[in-house]
Length: 251
Image 1 (spheres, rainbow, N blue to C red):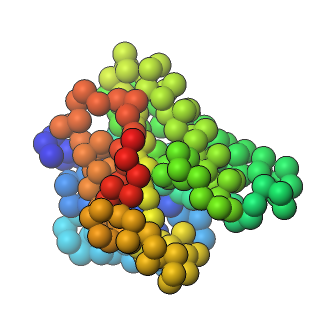
Image 2: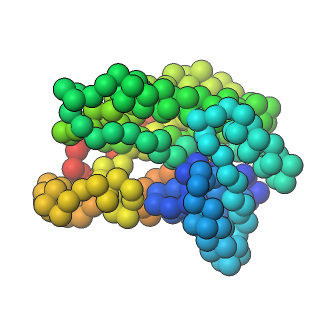
């Protein structure tokens, strides 16, 4: 990765899992990293301390990405310290229910859709002015393979992330003339994440058996792909989706 020194990256939901792994990797590649969190201040501070202990630069900033005012406040804090955001990694996962459509209310399905798109809208709106002004930016959204490959009980998450992926494609088309690339990373099952804790041992064994590379993804596997999309090296990929699933689904 070249030319990253001094770039400012905002990683939403970065106190654990994929977000934390991404924050650490971007910092190792000489970006200044904003570790956004909602409630886990101790975990976010640990991520920052680890980055600083390795010679990187990071700051933890609290904010509910579903709320425009909170997002604006977060961006102001970053601007005061480091200036505008160059790279957005929108990883924060809003709550959702796991149940079949038959048992689901509109508030459960529509609420997840609203949360997903409200958060993506708010953070994107907030970071675009600085990217547009300098004619360079990277927007990376974390999706899920469930937006393409349905799994029982996951209709709320899968539908919301499918909407997010299409939102990203429209942005890619609109923002390309401004020098801003927009891409989606869609992991399959990932170890050491909140979603992984919802999978029982039998399910996990079946997923591993169905994965040609013979294991589930780790947060670092996903972070590596995000880091490429965030880099100067990615000069000509926009509107794409990277499936990080070890061959579990191929499309």
